[in-house]
Amino acid sequence: MSVSRETDNFIRSYLRAISGWADRLHLFSARADCRLITKHIHDSLQLVEYIPPNSSVADVGSGNGLPGLALAAMRPDLRVTLIERSIKRCVFLEHVSRETNVEVEVLCQDATKVEGRFSVVVGKAVANVSGMLQLVGSIIRSGGMGLFFGSEQDVPDGVIAKRHENKIFNRGYIWEVKFDG
Image (cartoon, rainbow, N blue to C red; front, top):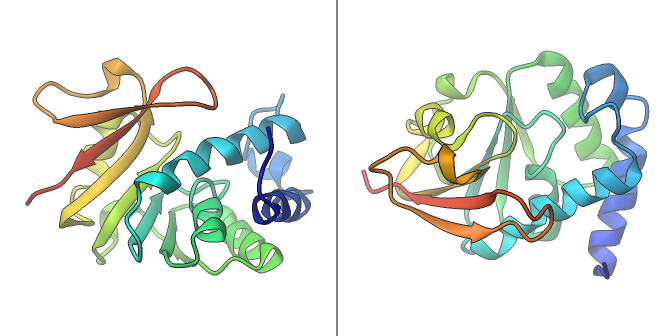
């Protein structure tokens, strides 16, 4: 897969920054190597095309920093906040932000206790779409949207969600859910 110079630079600096942390904090599966982690970064970057310019973005359950750090690296117009409740992972996220030179805010608290409102909320490997909708409903602005990775079965009945193909892992979808009120 060919990538832009800035994407390649971010991937290299991210891989250097997570060295020594990934195993201790269980940031990826035990089988994850550089190729698989790079694939996770590309997977995260699929969201770029769906996020309006100058959006405030919350990455809920940031854990390994994806997709939030990748989005902030590729879209400097975004104001990205990484929300993570684990103190160890928050320390890690601050470290990676410094090492990759990607400006983000790290909030070390449960998403249900966050007081801010965001125009876009993203989540990857935190919960299924139904769980994410319950988790983030209070932090999305009216008129905002959620972008979540999941399967067809993850979207609850009665929820209107636009389905986008996941072009990287070729399984599951990216679900775009609008929040009107």
